[in-house]
Image (cartoon, rainbow, N blue to C red; front, side, top):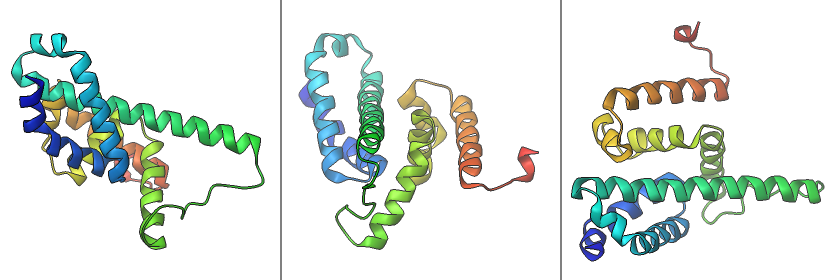
Length: 168
């Protein structure tokens, strides 16, 4: 059963996770960890309705990404307090400096949003999923997803210092 699920979803999960975190190697690690968890929870997955197994995998990858972001945030704060004289180099990533900087800015803004809002935004506006498809992944109604997208956009406007007449 896990093998079939792997064949159906692995490529899709890798693409989604890569767009979510912006790092192909990290995405591969997160998806691989999700498959390990699926193997450890095979009995649980077998009891889930086949249509919901996909949602279970997406939720597992999303939770792993959230854990990674929290851990990275904690480690950044911890290292900054230990050595305040040497800030992290924002251009330390692979690729051109311009590309790394814009990706770093994007990740910084997304990291300031609640993790579920950031995930929903990426799924909707980067990956092109509809609110109905996202609702399926999160086991929520499409209306709830649309509301959370609205909330995420509001949080983004606040974070970017953009005033919008709709907020007043």
